[in-house]
Amino acid sequence: MKNLLIATLLGASLFSANALANPYAYVDVYSDTYLKGAVKRFYPGQSVGRLGQMKPSWNDEISSIQVVGDNVCAMLFSDKGFDGKLVILSESHVDLGEIDFNNKATAIHVVQGACDESSLTYFYKKTNYGGNDMALPIGFSISSLDDTSELDSDWTDEIESIKVGSGACAKLYQHEDYGDHGPVLQATSSMTSLPSEISNHASLKIVSDKGWNCSGDVVYP
Image 1 (cartoon, rainbow, N blue to C red):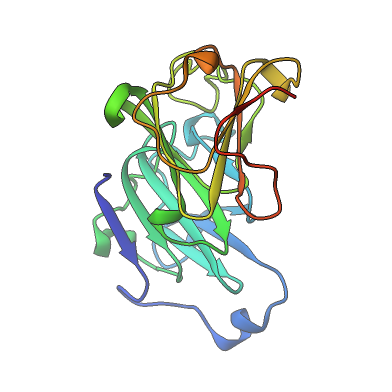
Image 2: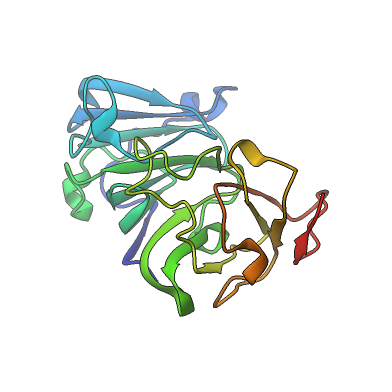
């Protein structure tokens, strides 16, 4: 389990009634405290696994954050590739130093809906939930697990175990781009080791376990 901090009303907040009335949902991150300095906007469903790859770089640059919209949160990670210490922010914070996370964010998910760690699905590079890991929300997908511009390293054929988040279905594909010409793992519960049929895998999706064909096993489209 990650070193987790869930912050809601820690520190001063600029989350006003006007912001709550805003029909749009987004998260603004700022390079300085008190919502000053350079700003970058993220929308629900956006994820960046390497903030240092952005132009300009936002690696270890976030000092304050504004959260706008109902049930919106930012999930900040101390390590690239959605790893390390996790901080979940569902309210605006004008000084992340108050929660010991000033200039420490290296990756981000922006989520609307399930704003808690239990909704995240964890992938591990060793069996029994060991080795390097990455934490991904419902709605996340990556068409090529060797995309090191987003992930901490090449994850192709490297996943050995999975902790499936609440309400999630983890779909692991043998081929890139979610190819349907090979076996697909549709995991709805945690697995200490993967079935041999899916030991080769190259892309993944995290979807809701409701309204999807998620058998909880390996299927052949």
